[in-house]
Length: 213
Image 1 (cartoon, rainbow, N blue to C red):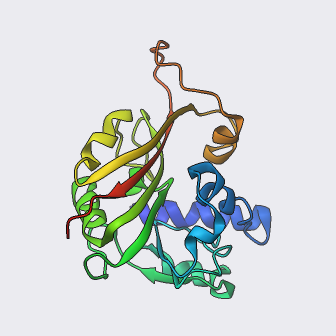
Image 2: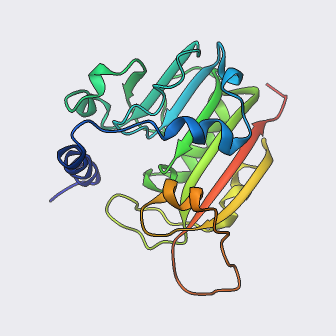
């Protein structure tokens, strides 16, 4: 029987066969302009991308002190091209991340929160590893039926699970259209909450870790 990671890796090997070299040029916009951050905000910062995939999501962030991606399939990604990236890949689960308390200045989860095995443990791990004053940048699908790769489904109300100890700084809801998450956000079509059709939406949220240790 195929596991979730089998389905995940099959997806990426298919993308690799279609694209050749997996592209990553779109990520800089979403780490910066989309969340009202300048590129130099990341100077000497420690950045973590949870469920990073193999594209090299942090390749643009050469100014950072550390740029780390954690993913259960990280070792496999190295075999399909990630070995050539400047960021560091660590094989691990979001429910038990091998980092000390208050370690990261910025933690990101782009299109990965609904892929985790245990949502509550993942959220508490995020709380643990963000420095006071640090940021969580979240992009996630919502309102979808569970799939092999996305076994967890939740609504736009997921933001409430992060508060406190995080403070919500920016929030947007988008319709998900053909072409995927990033293309849908760039299309900037606000989610119509009056339309009760059962369909995907996209949540974009920027949080700050409150000041206590």
